[in-house]
Amino acid sequence: ERLPPADLERLLSEGFVPRVLPGADVIALEVDGAEDVGQPFILRYRARIPNFGRPGPGGSLLVPPLFPTNLAAQQASLPSRTTSMGVPAFAQDVRLVIHGGQASQPPVEVDQGNIRYARRVTQEGTDIIIERSIRIQNAVIPASDYAGYAQMIRELSQIDMVETPVTR
Image 1: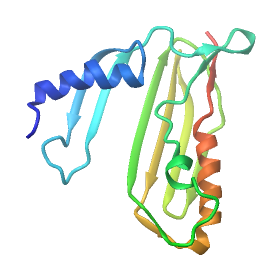
Image 2 (image 1 turned 90 degrees about the vertical axis):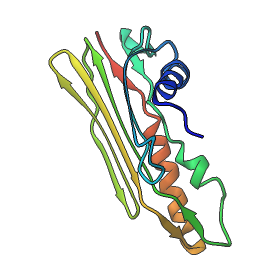
Image 3 (image 1 turned 180 degrees about the vertical axis):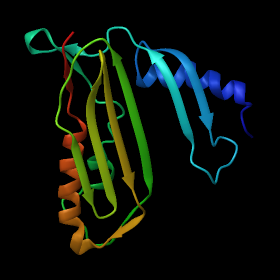
């Protein structure tokens, strides 16, 4: 049984968004793909979040990573394997706009086999734009390749956990 669109939107705006972004007040929500199980489920929303981040050095604010994937726990939890490992397809794009402030971080790009990862921080006037994209293609990792794959996934998980220092 499927939820009516209005109920789905209410559940997402009252339950999901505030859980992943504590204190968030959803101001716009759009859901695509909920009707067709063969299509990607796309959730777009805008939210206001007071007191986002934690104090950092020199009066800066450290903005946490949004929706860290923790790929290491999902795909590289074992020290070694004796059988092949299936890797499911996954795609996620996150765009965060912080109004009022300055930030600078070098861009990060990783393109390794079935995984593409990119994160960049840009400045548009007084707005800070933090964008992160992950694309993982279906793959089968042979046991003999697991150690190298696992090392790359662990490094990517650490990269994905970097906070962004923001000054006001």
